[in-house]
Image (cartoon, rainbow, N blue to C red):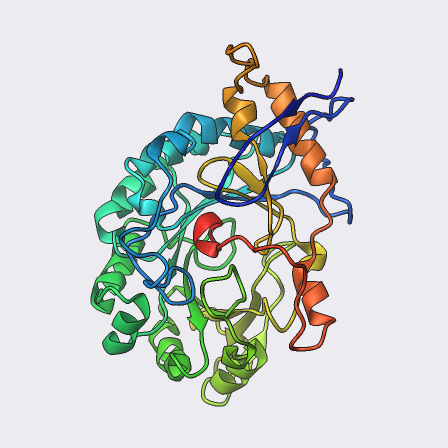
Length: 397
């Protein structure tokens, strides 16, 4: 097979052409990247829109009423997303997380979930299908999400104090409605443990020193023993719009010490290979982890790089494939899926299933991304690379 290159012009950021390898790459579940890392986790952004304006993700001064969002015709359809996902699953993906923007803003998202829930791994197993949301629409959508086949939900919640929460989301949204959405998710069964692991209902808190770090203990107290897993995420240098500074990062080790001083913790084993969160369980009266009290997680994306076993790929809402959350460029898959105009005005045929799988395999095999490891080896005021990094709101966290 000769190498076929699909060109794409995209003004949003630099895009790499999607090319088919000279020799087909078989989708046998054994794909590894340039550093020997397997492909197991796919994050799919289904919209670039959000109804919050959190300063660390979509600050209002950048994402204002005149911000040029993608037109609907540019977005991958549910059928196109499912087709791409099928190729990833054939290559070894076992977990799919739907993100945004805010994924529940995508109309009829439960239709996509139902389509993805029908996919099976080469061993015939269902996928671990999950979704990250700000929780604002969760009360309304929880039952439909569960019935469609969603297994788990992660809710972003940066504090329990209503004034702090309204200030951080910057649209005056009350924290009570997010807590109500969490309860609705639990009521329909989205909090049930998956495969004998911890709770399927997680809460993510981005900790920004000087902004909401005083909410760490109130959050820990509130969710201890609730059947939900609270995870603390270091404020990350994602994109170029959040004004990130290192002095606003509270290291995860400091968070753990802060909680441990009041509610003793013991470190737990990772729940899965490539897991981003370090697990800590609450200690019971016997000095051991008490499952009834639950656990917390810490994601040390700034102070403790975990690139070495990163097994995640990210698909943007209009079909660009990114190899890293801190990427500066994406690989266009939409042109392979839809076909591209030929010089004579006709349309090149869309890629076959085998061709799409080969293109994805070629991209992953060439992956050597390890941004966080490189950053950690440099002085505090140094930067990694010169390209403009992709915004987190564009491909999800």
